[in-house]
Each structure stands twice: as C-alpha cells, then as structure tokens.
Image 1 (cartoon, helix red, strand yellow):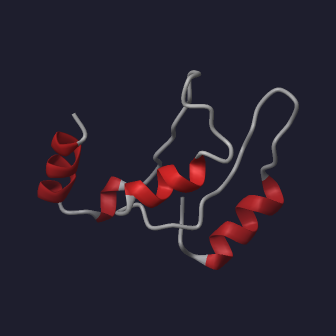
Image 2 (cartoon, helix red, strand yellow):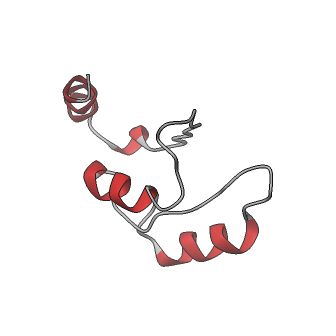
Image 3 (spheres, rainbow, N blue to C red):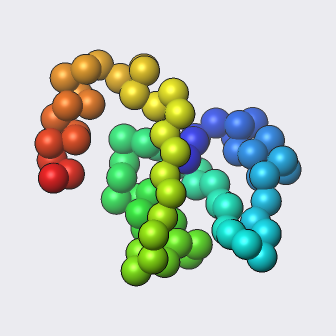
Length: 74
C-alpha cells in the first residue's frame, strides 16, 4: 500500500507473483483501510492465511492515532 506513483512503479517492476504465491500493490492511503480491503479482494482470499508486512508505516503517525486505530480494529 502506497500512494506515491514512483514507489508503486518500482514495486510492480521488481516484485511479482509466482505460482507459489501472489504479490500485489495497492494504490491507496494507509489511513483508508476500507479502500485497501476493497482493492485487496482482487488478490487475497480472506478465507485463507494471509501475511501482512507493514514496514515503516507507523513511524510517521502520531502514537495516539496508531493506538486509536488499533483499538478500533479489535
């Protein structure tokens, strides 16, 4: 998930799906989880285990915002 066109272009060029697993990038803002889930349904089967990596995402967000969002998701 990113909304920077340059980041998305590099990600799509360098990391692709294989028969062993799917890889996709979503052009969205991390603060809009509903949109992310909407776009992710094209690739993900929510009835199966899914790995999620969030690298460097929360570092730029105020602590309070992160805590509130996590609490809302429970």
